Image (cartoon, helix red, strand yellow):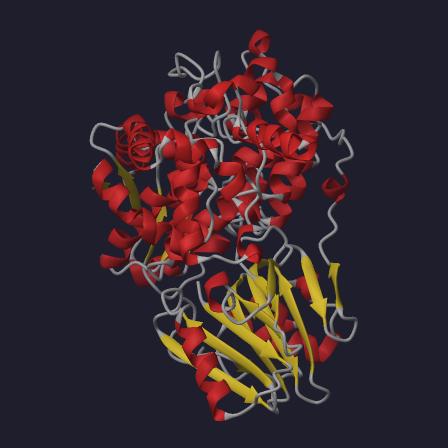
Amino acid sequence: MCGILAVFGCIDSSQVKRSRIIELSRRLRHRGPDWSGLHCHDDCYLAHQRLAIVDPTSGDQPLYNEDKTVVVTVNGEIYNHKELREKLKNHQFRTGSDCEVIAHLYEEYGEDFVHMLDGMFSFVLLDTRDKSFIAARDAIGITPLYMGWGLDGSIWFASEMKALSDDCERFVSFLPGHIYSSKQGALRRWYNPPWYAEQIPSTPYDPLLLREAFEKAFGQKAGRNGGGGNGWAGKAVLKRLMTDVPFGVLLSGGLDSSLVAAVASRFLAESKVACQWGSQLHTFCIGLKGSPDLKAAREVADYLGTRHHEFHFTVQEGLDALEEVIYHIETYDVTTIRASTPMFLMSRKIKSLGVKMVISGEGSDEIFGGYLYFHKAPNKEEFHQETCRKIKSLHLYDCLRANKSTSAWGVEARVPFLDKEFIDTAMSIDPEWKMVRHDLGRIEKWILRNAFDDDKKPYLPKHILYRQKEQFSDGVGYSWIDGLKDHANKHVTDSMLMNASFVYPENTPTTKEAYYYRTIFEKFFPKNAARATVPGGPSIACSTAKAVEWDAAWSKNLDPSGRAALGVHAAAYDEPVDAKPANLLNGSPQQLQESVVKTATVV
């Protein structure tokens, strides 16, 4: 992943301003430690910190069209850049970078080309001929992007909040699937799939079609039986093996990461990248010693024959890293911080081995309703609508975690489950097939498990293929979350939590753990605009607030851990989580605030 920063319409265009832009761009250097670039045109600046994955020798940014009148700074990967170059044969390319096609597509098609891009990306493009500019973000928000406004009328864009928070009066998270045009002065949505309207689909379940759609996200050409042919059999993992640097797969031993590893391992030998880096896949896992993930990941790695790297961390090492983690991931969301910390530590180990790109399993739980709370979905309509809500908010949770935790150490994470075509295929299936049906032997994500349940040429051992969902923050070791709560209890008093609604009136923390994270976040990002970029509301086992209504008992047991899904998780909590702090002085922090306000009004 790279880091981008762009500023337009600065009143000050002196050398001092240029120096300031360089200084702010340096805050993103962890994302792109390989090279720095800056293009200035009057009061417009486009800066770039590069992580060289494709064409390391000549793909430095910003990138240009033939006469350098169009300038673009990009963070991401364009997987179909070679096919797009075929449509641009009358254009002269300067580099082998996959991102250079953006400048030429703009020159050829104007602003209406973003839908042609197959990949993960955030970019800002300047047309120096009229000083107009556009900014766009990929369909789901795999790559981060923020937009801000300065008091001098300037407009800012940056990969991370830390690059613009000091200089902007207001800033927001740039919406996924949208483009901003300076000519129109507004955002518009370029990504309009059928599922976005949340209408209930009715396409019958075809396991082979679903399997092929996922494999195509890797780019594997084969027939419907996976054994060769002219069609796309897999329609999501060799595509993501487009790299000129060493890579691997993050393997937790759960269903999603295991499928990613299985498909990548199966097709790696046939890929171009195998000639450069070898045909044995590298896999990586982290956990507390004796954790569920470590055991399962080792078994999957042995089954697939990967070169497996197992990393351990202690609870204390995780606690020591919390401040740095929150600074990098830029959120105070509890479940995101719980999961980001081991991922942050693992990414550092991975980078130390010389690896710069990893493939990961994010997105599957949102698409297929894999979180354990989906067991309580009352009907297929609410099930489907919840999956739509979860996908739409991925950029605030799992995509943010996966991207920023790895980018903190100059590692790029790719996510084949969030391939546009795969999402379209999976979200067109009648949600009745996705629902948990114990009477039919269907557990969570049954349709995905069933699609890869091949007795003739197994992808995975059966017990791994049908392993119960384990959230990453739980799978690294149950004592990790328990340790976080104990640590927060030592730093946050009952009185602090009781008065939380006065100190933090927006998104008021309701547990000591949430309060502790909030204090760290506010230290780095004290502005109202910063705290507004983080979502809030009640959650059970990573649910949206709406899904909490599915079970009346959940409102008494609000916790993002999968173990909060009482009666579903095999190792569920024995009693409501944080019940005591949530009822301080016979009332929640919010209830206390309402009581004080009411009393003040009477007086």
